[in-house]
Length: 191
Image (cartoon, rainbow, N blue to C red; front, side, top):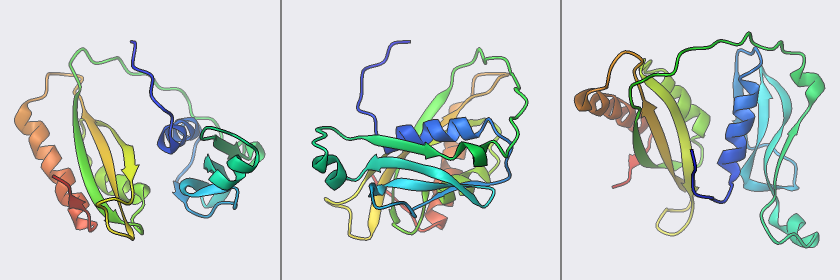
C-alpha cells in the first residue's frame, strides 16, 4: 500500500516503541513526563515497564538541536536493553486477517494537561469493546484557541469484525460509549 509522505512526530515514535514493548511480557506499561533536560518538555516521555524505568522517547530539545545546528526536528528513543531483557519475549500469536472492512472514527477532545493519553486509552480499553482493534492518538495541539493548561488531541478508533461487516448503528453505539467515557475524564468533545 502506498501512502503520502508525512512528517514524523512524537506519537509516531512513541507508537513504534509501544509496538516493540508489546513483544515482551509485562503487567503494566506507562509513560510519564519525567525526562532529562535534553528532551523537549512536552514532546517526550519516560518509559516505565512494570514499575521500573527502562528508557525515554521524544523530541530533542530545540535549544540542544539549535546548538548543534540541526535544521529539522530530531526524535530519540533510548531503551536500557539490560532492563528490557529482564522481561521474556511473548510467544508469537497469529490470527487470520479479516475479509471484512475496518471502520474508523476520529474524535477530537480538549483535556487538562494532567490527563495523559495512557489514562484515556485505559478508560477506553475498560469498555471492553470486542471489535475495537485499535485506539491511537493521531495529533496533539496546544495554544491558539486551546486555553492555557489544556491541550487538544485527535484520536482514531478502528473497529473490525472477523465474522461480518459491522453495521452503522453498532459503530455509532460504540462511538457514543467512547465519547461518554472521555467526557467522564473531564474531556470536552470539539465540534
